[in-house]
Length: 69
Image 1 (tube, rainbow, N blue to C red):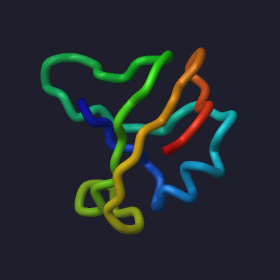
Image 2: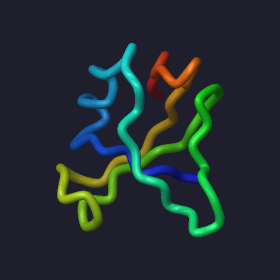
Image 3: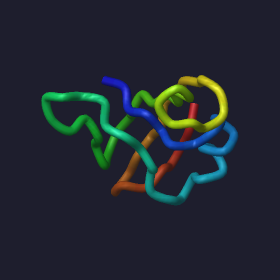
């Protein structure tokens, strides 16, 4: 499962620690987003128009970003 994170860079995502995750679902078979636990995220510029391609992992707790790897 991979969500598209709506940030131009991983650095921009890290600056959002403490805020909710802005994302786009990728599955046709139901929501993949979870408000708690680790999520795999990426930016796909051809879909979002933002920055360049990158991948990362985000730790969520109560729908808030706690950590970015």
